[in-house]
Length: 440
Image 1 (cartoon, rainbow, N blue to C red):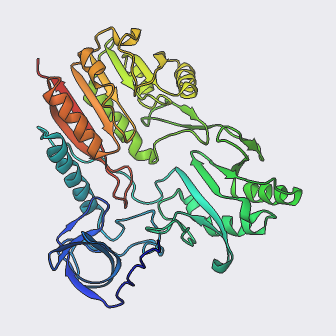
Image 2: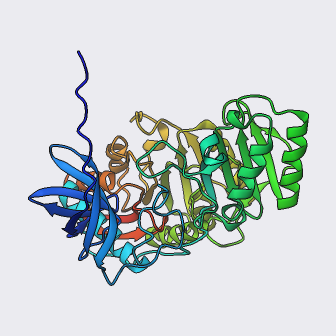
Image 3: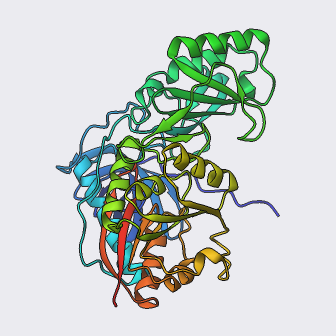
């Protein structure tokens, strides 16, 4: 059966009034009663736009002209904002971005969880430029675009955006994207380089994914470039643990809370993207939990010890549980290096064993830092441990709202405080922290 040909999109421009922002940062308009999502539009604006997609239920478009601008509109700093999919909100003033994220959070709590916080905490904010210390960039050799491209994907596309720089990346890398692309274009295997991973701390480490062995001349060029820019450089020919050092390697470490504590991490380990914001987040979590010397804290999804070390330094007896064995080992080693102790355990938190020894005691407090899918599977066991306070760090308002509804309606907790963590400025990503307290 022959496929029905899609109707070509009209080339005409249309007018619309933007009435809201969608969860992904696009403007929302109603045109002849039909919802239209328009990239680049802000609430209160009158815009001209072109259609990019038409379906039975909704249309999509992109702004070509702003006829009446919002007072919250600002000029995007990045010259690639109109094409790169890495940022969605550079045209919106930073304080308005925070208001948008707070609205997304509160709307999700009410709509999905059926809960309203007793207190809206002040937003936790930090630097809005050059804040990304971790990134995974695409690499692609595209002859029609002049050679090797390094960067993020184009908006709504699988293609790489032709970036000359990135203003949200650590400047030691963000200012060098064009130079890195030019270097890779000189190698003998430019079509066999799919990815570049970045980890920035006191120095910058790069991990270059290679699908074919570089030549001897390639290795010389890579080492020379790394030395000139003070980069440590690995090749990754296989899985993320299969790294080959091309230069002398210095350890990567960071302070989780701005104190003298130091946590070591590998170039492919998960650490929070925004280092300065993460330190504020950790200090707030410890403050909200209010651990007392000798008090017991159950920490779930503990990772490398980002919260564990500061909680232990505050005198808490921490039971830290993580699903990945390698992170458990490195987390325990991090605490030992700082002269601290905690009980680090490996367990599947998505298929928890209610008979596990670490679930038998009662805990004074609990801290949950789950992935986007949330912590719904482990909530019954957490509630059975009867912590007086639970701090929940969330990277997705929908799953936080779902889990908040469970904690409040099923397990007898109050949502006493919630606030936005601006971990990803200029994106529509909403990170947040919530405090739950038992009613009894």
